[in-house]
Length: 104
Image 1 (tube, rainbow, N blue to C red):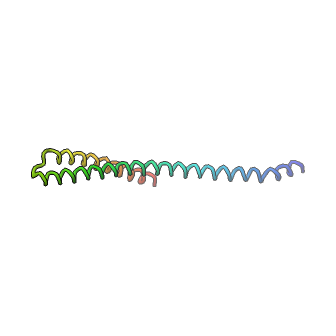
Image 2 (cartoon, helix red, strand yellow):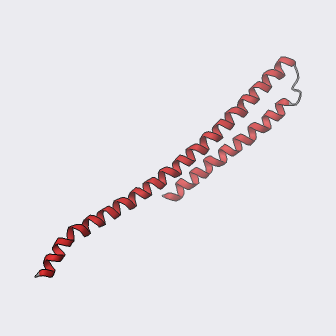
Image 3 (tube, rainbow, N blue to C red):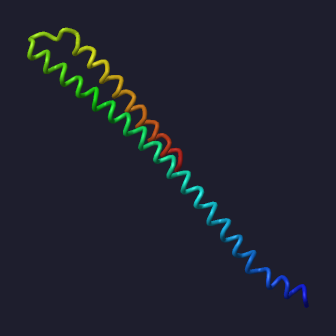
């Protein structure tokens, strides 16, 4: 009878521990996903900024070429920068899409 009483008194502690374990495990998974998303957002922001800056450089080069009446090589340089930034941004987007498709 004493053993049964001991087990009955111990049961709430075991149940509480099991619930806490599963809650903590699911919280760790959520935290890991949120951290991964934050890294992706940071990378996307940096690539977007790079793309915006290369676009501004291209716009400026075109405006200066129109003003002077000749391209003088700066437009080609700006186009190269823009193509590199665009390529990096699309590579990132395709990588993100691939990761999301693999999750399902």
